[in-house]
Image 1 (tube, one colour):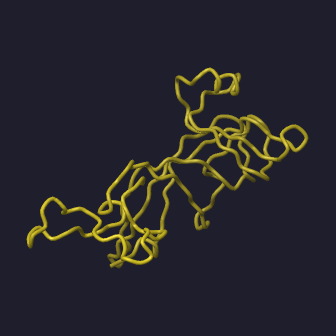
Image 2: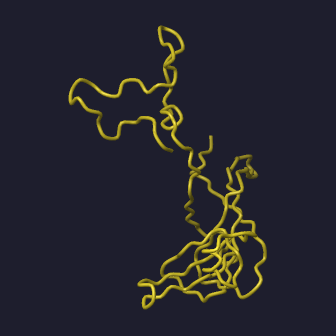
Image 3: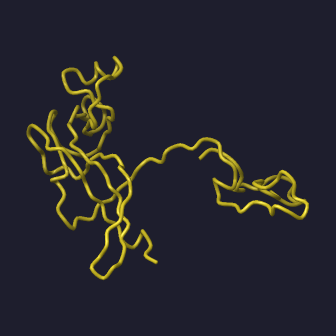
Length: 181
């Protein structure tokens, strides 16, 4: 069986940006569309993540003199309505849903970047946010098996079980229990 960590492929889908494009920026924002698979000629299956990436627009250039650090603030994903605070910050620019900062990057306000900054075969580091799942039990959160359905177990199918012993008479740190995911 092919492990997903052995073969990682990322496909990028984007719309053509209008305006000057800067190519020296080595980052881009995107949104996960879903998963699919590719087949090699030998019949091997490769899991693939589909990402809708860019274009991103430089909203603001932060400087050491004014802000205390150097960074570039970029916007991604146009929307119709935004709140007044964000509208005042963006001024005459488009309404962006997502604003992020990247330190030690050089670009001018209004410049646009898209996936053309990457070439085929480039190694890409991707980080993302997991959707919050709220307060979950130990079975979903940690993959516990739960109790057997028979042999005297009644209403405890998905419980944690024992969480300690007589000594040291407190729950040890790192004990896997129910909680926020």
